[in-house]
Image 1: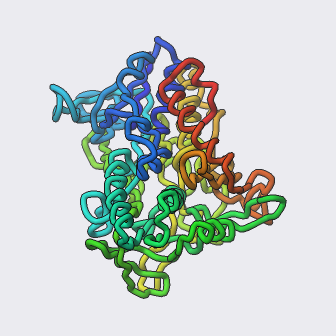
Image 2: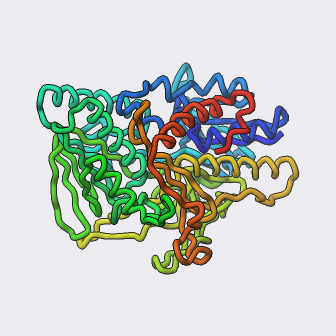
Image 3: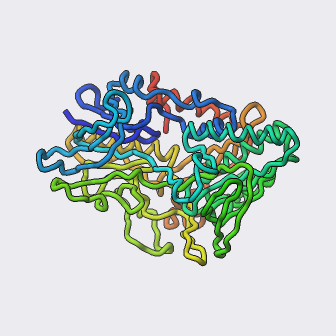
Length: 484
């Protein structure tokens, strides 16, 4: 009997667990370790953050699903990986600490034959003083963050209804943050809700971002086919912001937040500030802080993880100038190069470099949008990692027939621009996510499959996806027929 141990129960880890268990059946074990009680469909946190969905609509408890599927669930936090075992035993294991119940605080060694690191990110609010829901800015990264964000947003609506003007600051709250798409979506949903309440004359919505230009989205921008024309995402995004009356500040890194004021630096090295009444600024990501030790209890964390805390996989981490970056730099199997039975997927793997050209201010401050690897790519990675491990267990052969490089994988992003019958959405697909200039020398991507449009159909598609993917995540009948 083989044991597959999965750390994390987000989109990537949960997908890997369901796929692995379905294919392995009763003769092998799948164990999931996660500190979270609930699964959350993160894309819909946007609607929680504007009061159009409740937290109960975007979450469900993990334990009943795993019990029904025959997956062992341990609600605990992974502390350290021991890929060589220790002096007393040769079997590799992960040390975990329980976070709830009678075993809260107790530690346990969980052995494994194959390990999937799908821990996701640490939300690195502390990188910017005063950042985060505990201080002076909001977030929609988790359902409880989104609920607090809605609570604060309501107060602003109440003030506008009394004739008081409010300034909304939305975007990235760190010079190397990712998820510009989620922040962009939230900005549009705020403006939609303001218009729905007929409060436009009392509102000012300002976008602030580390992107070199609008529409970068952490993937170096794109050229999209829209109505027979090929348009850069810069123009695509600017036109949407102008339609929704959103002003913008780009090429900037938020460095400090105080009550009602954000301090930032731009690429010119200028130190500026902007006042606000409400701020939703997404943080940078870091690894969750897992340690690693060899059989002699020597720290080998640097062997498994990059300096940012994300796990090394089959990527080319050789330092090289931007002009020499290639599609082949990106991993495709997510296997750790040192320990072949360890994999990392979703946000947990270390990218070889950004997709966007790295930038620094004249003062040396990094101001670069980080590569996105959430949502659809995370699900695909979780699936192919599970498939490859299953085949190794069942055949004894390490072939890695299933691959999913960001430089060979497409992604669809549906950006809601309002909820309800009058809601719209900006729909964009890119193929591949990371440009391949050797294969597609003109556009960097296959322009036939890189498209963008705005309309109501996209909104209803996103609304349908919410229910479809929660159905899939609950492992309802024939869930595996729904693609990632």
